[in-house]
Image (cartoon, rainbow, N blue to C red; front, side, top):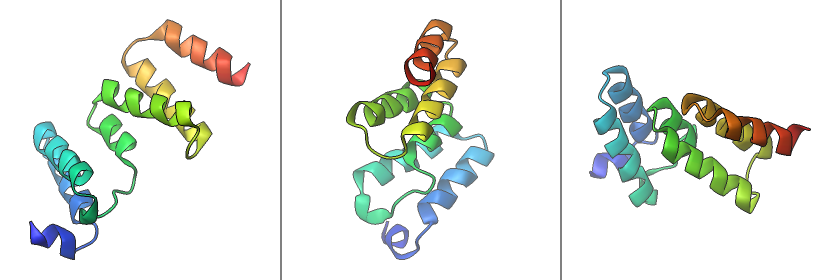
Length: 104
């Protein structure tokens, strides 16, 4: 996979193509490859947004919770991402608790 290291954005394009072609397992494989091979390039948008795009709600929620627990990155973006995941998972009580905790 040397070509992946030579061309920045290749992984991102592979993710997009597989997502457009409705090949979620292939797209998820690209995402896993990017995680295991940091030299292959940084994904932009971040991985948590790709998990949302691939409708991997539990994994995206886990990542947002991790970001919130360690306080790294954009706090508001992580809260909103968490809320999107909870909505997709129909976790209404958890969604309300999150809103109360951060916005009330």
